[in-house]
Image (cartoon, rainbow, N blue to C red; front, side, top):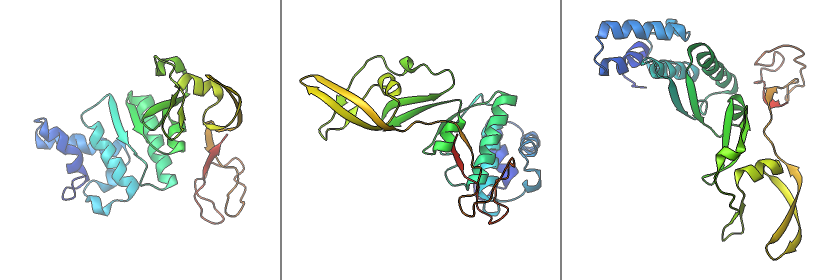
Length: 225
């Protein structure tokens, strides 16, 4: 965000660059910020906004030109867990109700599990695919098994997914040109849900969807279902 411009001017700036008159650009910016729950912070400078509020203004600025696709690099990287989920919920609402698609880059397993489809990369290569309507055959045209000079083995994505993903494997039946692998403890990325108990004080959330523990104030974590 431009530090010397308030929230509405930051959001209106892309329209000004497109030749939209300033008064109309500001009116559209006000409407977009109101839609994202920021009507009370229209004239606040970026330094006066919280991390979550800054993200909402940045999202509003990205949406103001009505794109069909938004590229987001670590969109929740600097946010606390609760604010991160609020931003992801906003993405979901924009996708479902306004038809906006998002391409996210993240190191967060929780963010990756939120997406409809995720591609897992390691050392610049696709190693797995997760999500809905997954077709692992689309990830690669070859079936290379690469062993680098350090002895690290890279499998093609379709084989890795069929094996069950990353994990520890036992190597047996070692003959020239033949290796047998058997999985021991394989990591997979399942659905992420809110934890049922607080890891700090063991408070039982029961059926509540609270994001903060009412007993100790800790952020409620996400765990694999």
